[in-house]
Length: 197
Ligand SMILES: Cc1cc2nc3c(=O)[nH]c(=O)nc-3n(C[C@H](O)[C@H](O)[C@H](O)COP(=O)(O)O)c2cc1C
View 1 (spheres, protein in one colour):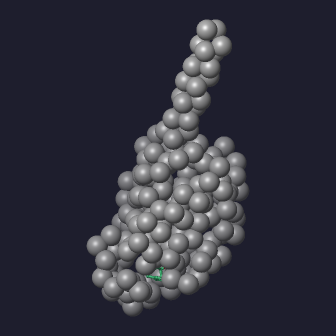
View 2: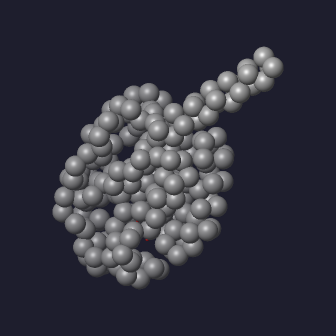
View 3: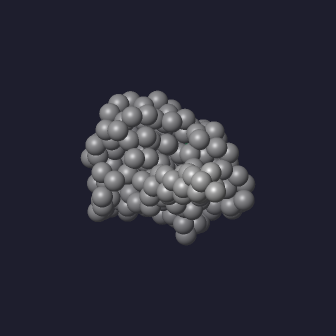
């Protein structure tokens, strides 16, 4: 009998520990709707879709890095702006901010690959926050570059974080059109990182 009570208490403690972990997770992402490579005109960005799959699996809260000035819906115009921002090492502004930042111990950070790297607006977000003690799990969508150099960029920007885990890269078209395949990629990645889902 006593053994059974101890086992039940242990199970309860594990359950509570698990849910505490999910409550402490946040998915932050930047994504752009409009015209894009390989997917045509889209109403919801590819990275937004991937971000929502991660949040659904982990029970994390979501914060979207929404630009103060919208990026053009035209793919070519957006390419031109992204070039300008990269060349000038810009820090574009975004709207609002995360509430209760200090409560999160795991932060997923997602973005599309722009010119082989991390869009500058993601730098703005990271530089505005204190990551001390937080574990960061980066992810991105792309159309051929994989992670590009974003793992190194994230590690360079996040020197105050407790850890920067190995990031996940998913094709934009997969995130947009094949939720099952994207969901599998997310599940495998979370397993590898040993993150509860
Ligand atoms: C400005 C810009 C630059 C891009 N540069 C690259 C690139 O260098 N490598 C790549 O694989 N895809 C590149 N892409 C494609 C995006 O990474 C891909 O479509 C991504 O899924 C878009 O995500 P989003 O819908 O969340 O914005 C670029 C797209 C844009 C708009």
